[in-house]
Length: 224
Image (cartoon, rainbow, N blue to C red; front, side):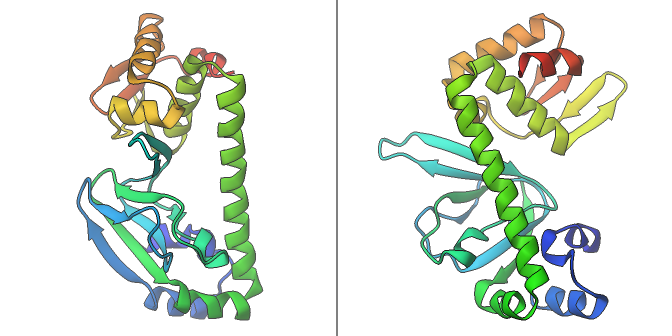
């Protein structure tokens, strides 16, 4: 747990004394797979850091369709946007797997931002990186076909959750095929067709809530 927290942008600029004080201000919560952490529209009052497990951020359209914005894992934060813009949550957060989260109330964090500008800069840097990723996703929706978006999504998941094995890069993304489709903004049928094509080319093997990437170069070329 300590190693995960040490890697967070929030702790990057702290000395040992400040690091200890901030850790003591945090609370720890466990969530079961499928459990809602917060809903879209809820008051934004906490920042969360993932210690164990995976969490998805998603928005729901009036007709019930869901757009999966991100899948986050250990060492990543969410919920910080409302710290700088105190409005209701712009997306819901749901545990994709059993998860352990560290949370810090915004009221407890604000003194750190005003008293330690270096902490504020680290959080702003993390927000800027998320904005860059959002811009990339929007560009992909306009300029890339569905197979390219699927390949790029799998590569992104592999970068964060992949484990090397003798057979290839094993990526336990823990998402259903419907959730993969929501992630790339396409129908499940279209995504399944792309995955089947990748498998036929020998680039990967599809497994339940996971893929085994056998040809990383081939998948990378298709993502461009």
